[in-house]
Image: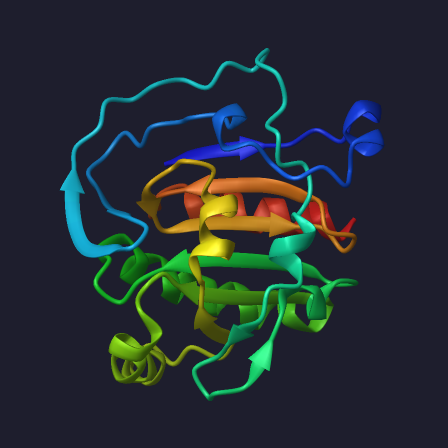
Length: 209
């Protein structure tokens, strides 16, 4: 699992309205086998990767905040209701990109359910966005919600939402911890049972302070 951290420098604040550049994103490779996919290609591919450290002195990623086009993009949840990520501004948010066929996603979601129960009363919203085709996967997603007793908002991520968030990382799951005012504080790529839950919890605690 890799983690991307965005520092809120003065320069980032001055450029807050800027949309992200995929080519400028930081790349971090999972030290374990992960399930990945190409947007628009819903056939899962298993890829084994080689660990690659993140350069702490590298320039900050070009996605310091949630792009306006992403925050207001119309989304549909598993119950058929319309919503958008901007609905949750004012709260700390976790956006999780996942799919029903993704093994690491199936490991991570029970941990997200626990975090939601722990942090929801403190002003944290978790939003799960499936990268699958909404028409083809609707029944599978609804069954998944029931089987895993997911109690947070689940919907689908259209390409215009998923692509800017993923910044060229083709692996799922991916999770984003977003501040009350729309800053992306942490970007997690992949899932590690040993590390991810604790790191997500720490990121939420920091975001709430």
